[in-house]
Image 1 (tube, one colour):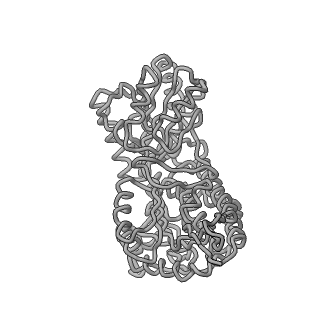
Image 2 (cartoon, helix red, strand yellow; image 1 turned 180 degrees about the vertical axis):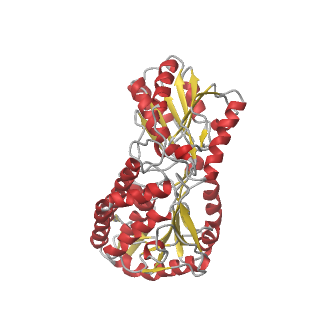
Image 3 (cartoon, one colour; image 1 turned 90 degrees about the vertical axis):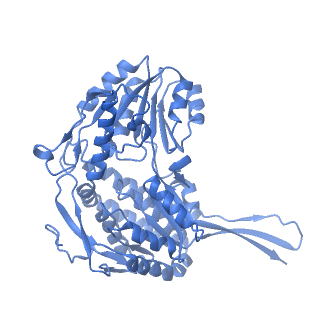
Length: 489
């Protein structure tokens, strides 16, 4: 299956197992497409269970040497990888946009964000502290140490193909775990570019391993059933997360899950409306609305509804849609046909049940949009309970605007979800800010801030949005076992 304009045998487009670039054992491959044009970018290996087992075995053999290395030495390699990521930011961003679709400006920012996780965890790896505990007897001494869990299987999504990789594997590597990464089948090329850097930096063979596959279920079964895997770190859908959680129970594997969201975005009557509009644009339409923490339900107090809606619609109309590789584009395509159909279905359902379209609302296949998965940035009003867009995560550029009357009402509506990843609200009343932040049932709260995620802060959800935290000092603890040692003198 040849790739357009790319030499198939180039090592850049094959798996990385045990320090070597290799094809899938089956010899099969699958194409990677540009979602803006439909163009085939490359063909990558379609790995199966045999390949996954080889990668896990390589990580297992590398674990004693890597975990036994001094933390500053591991940090040195990670920071060198960080440096190369930033040096090659433009090339990595171009690859990211080509396979994922987000505008180049966002792709560049993602590479910097991804490098930020490497920086943070390289330094945090030097600060994995133990402790001494006063013993209950004079002839004893009690120590607590922390050690790496072992081989980590990391499974990452397509919406942030660089940042989700480093947010998982940087803390694992920093504390001495070895890693097997399976990137999303839609966006493997960015991960391959990162692993080329890891090889160049000089990570020991087997410390980092990469397999690409068109059949995640088959590779997932090997990850779940192979006893050499100590931990699974997953970002993706809630449905798949539940399957992994059930499967990991058989061997009681440690598991970290960052799953779907359904974020409310609340604008109170005392909000700075202009800032709220800017925040709603940034949150809702970044990456074409394909983020787990993007605003999915916009609640606006009835006293500022007209002002907010008018300004919001005006800003949405100015968003330029197109190929993310073109300068000046604000929003790109949806990732694939499945995502496109879900967005279309949510709009059709809402309109059929009485919602009104204030702007957008159409798919685009004409002219420059031919061959891609484009849907216009859309604002809906007259949105009511019972519409799919209020019940499900849309993962697309659709913004439903819902009026509310009082704080109690909107908090109840915001919390009326089994998801609990991120929530946002705008208010200039300090008492309200503290009160509402405490009452919202979400793991991440943006108070007058539409972009709250940073490497140094914990990231994760409650309820059905996941288990554990990534980022911050808490993110490194996910990859550590706590061991108590009692000495008799």
